[in-house]
Image 1: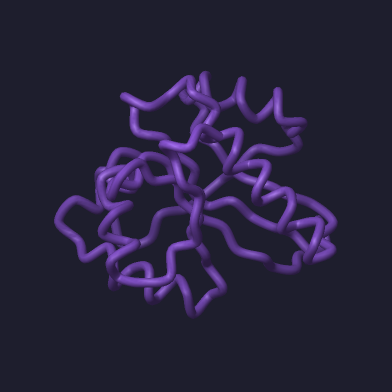
Image 2: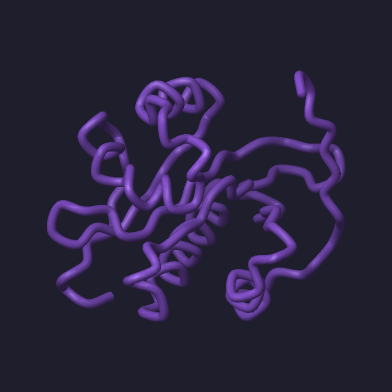
Length: 145
């Protein structure tokens, strides 16, 4: 990765604020919500964020957690992966994936998995090129509509 970019683990409210723009690019429904408060709740569920910053701005991030599931064993599950649109096609998402693959190996995970919206064709190309297989469909039932 070029010297102008720095990869780091988010550990503070300041780190999360640096990531807010790229988080909201992926999750615009959180626009009026307190991202730090949401992150703190997710941390209780073993959620972590690694991000790439340029200067003081997070330009790409990956959010993940390690969990155990009957169907996949010990799994590093990627909740979120996004690069600001103005920084795409520079290999940043690929660097973040390499980092979580390394973490998964160190933690002796059986799998790395994620869900992706059916319309995110560029992301799907990235995942397939990174060695992911399409292994299932994701279904959800939204409560409190």
